[in-house]
Length: 148
Image (cartoon, rainbow, N blue to C red; front, side):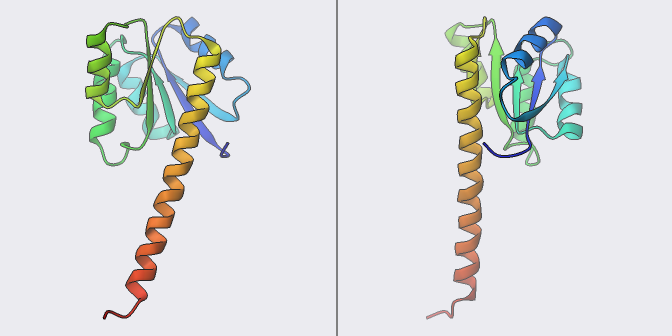
């Protein structure tokens, strides 16, 4: 896994934040917390997470609203969002997808499922970064080649 991965745990329930952090103890990453939607957006700017474990039902701004704002902003669009919520109806999942979530996990959270999804999301981020580097390299090589 890449060095310096950062996870922001956004949940208004402190025991939930503590449980998620405990589940992530063996993941090589930095962790920070937010207790509501507005604090989540503020922490995104200061902490610059790679992944957000985002509760849906939070005060001030819902997880749906936070996710939509992140995905609508070019500066934060690439942050991976894993919505973690007690909501598990088809309409809730559809709304999460429409907001731009990268994945969805229902509470109560299974530790092994959480760890697998987090490590998979970090792997996807690493592959996307490598793909972007290769695209830039190809563009640079093509720009330096004489036109026919």
